[in-house]
Length: 289
Image (cartoon, rainbow, N blue to C red):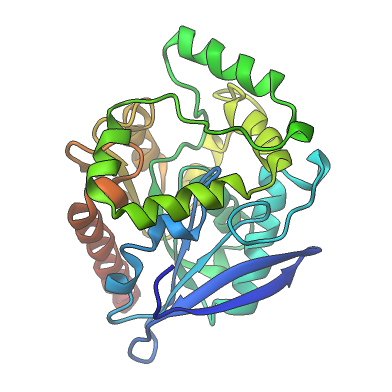
């Protein structure tokens, strides 16, 4: 996190969530809330959040078991629906009215659950490099590798050194971010709850395309302005993105050329332009209503 943040903790559903806020905007400007993905934290947005907060209030949080938030230390304390419930309680306490809500990867699945349960809390939605039905890669060899690792992973043994499979995005990130940002990112990963990795990893890696955890059938009932932002090379999520946007009641699609799963890190200017364009569109829609 950057120095301009006001940092706080909030007790939610038996866990203290670490969160921060910065910036302010004209009266009536909704807060922008950024929700990170699996094994991430609010630190994932730290390099861009001050720019976004130039003319609005921006809030980031660490989900339970992640970042600097509280750890449960058992598998039963983690699940996607638990994260949805946490986010709802968090928005009730800190949102200050309907918010513009961005969810990255697993965070996208969480914010979809939020708006489906409590549409009154959300003015608009950004679904960033995420899925409503399956996060599993199309390559069967990689699918098998992921399933094998997550099944064998024992959280009682602590955190693994890394969950990265390696790839070209790693090189792009290394070239784009300051070394001190990466060092903090690594330390935050090491400190997260291994039980969250196991429980949420198993939930996300399940092939749920037609399963009971799929949200695909519910997408038309998400009526707020929603932009799907995805990296051009983020397979399989970029392959799903056109359908994801089309099946929403009021969806748009923005593909960031050359980007993979974390465009805010590797292509920050294009990512910020996409987010700002969404916020302008949402404001126009609100003015017309």
